[in-house]
Amino acid sequence: YLFGRKKATEVAHVVWEQVIQKGDMVIDATCGNGNDTLAMLKMVTDDSDGCGGCVYAMDIQKDAIESTSCLLDQTLGSEEKERVKLFNMCHSKMEEIVPENSSVRMVAFNLGYLPGGNKSIITASNTTVLALKAAESVLMPGGLISLVVYIGHPGGREELEVVEAFGSSLPVSDWVCCKLQMLNRPLAPVLVFMFKREK
Ligand code: SAM
Image 1 (tube, protein in one colour):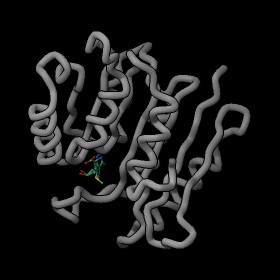
Image 2: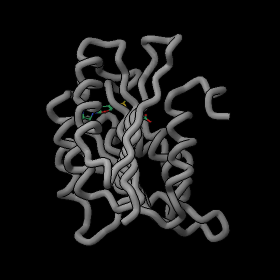
Image 3: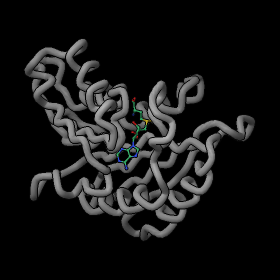
Image 4: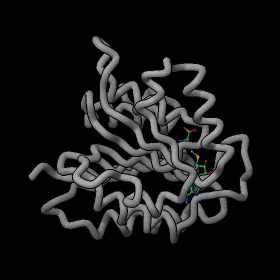
């Protein structure tokens, strides 16, 4: 029941579950406090043996990396935690950390600022578009670029326009791009999904 969920991130997770398979490699491009990272790790993990894929999680803020690491320590065993790799870096450089010939099933962005953190450290349209280009280049066929875009803060709507322009420019032969926006909640975050078609 997709629309009964209060949070945009919860709706995004429902979509991720349809795409991510056990054993996959996925990227959290804005790990913040680690909630999405943890959700992704559960989706790539096979419950029967605890084995599975991996999550590459990055954030430009050291505090966010520490916060994610702390959440993972509290929630996961050491073997499971080893399958999350944390990077204190700008997501526009994600190609540098993805091993050659790897297949990335999903790159997820939760844009804006860290809840409870420094509101001046915020995703910016110019680096977001570079990160989208990088995500496009690392993503495997059958993969997903997922974005939660907040529009209530200064610069948020401009960032949404950049994201929409990027999605609109992807060739229809290879991509299915769509957005989910609440009509009766005009300031609610907008979800954008870019599905890369299977070859
Ligand atoms: N997904 C997170 C969670 O589950 O807690 C919340 C993410 S928060 C809305 C956005 C994050 O993006 C912040 O932690 C911020 O530091 C990070 N960020 C901002 N600019 C960035 C950049 N250029 N590269 C990587 N992360 C960035």
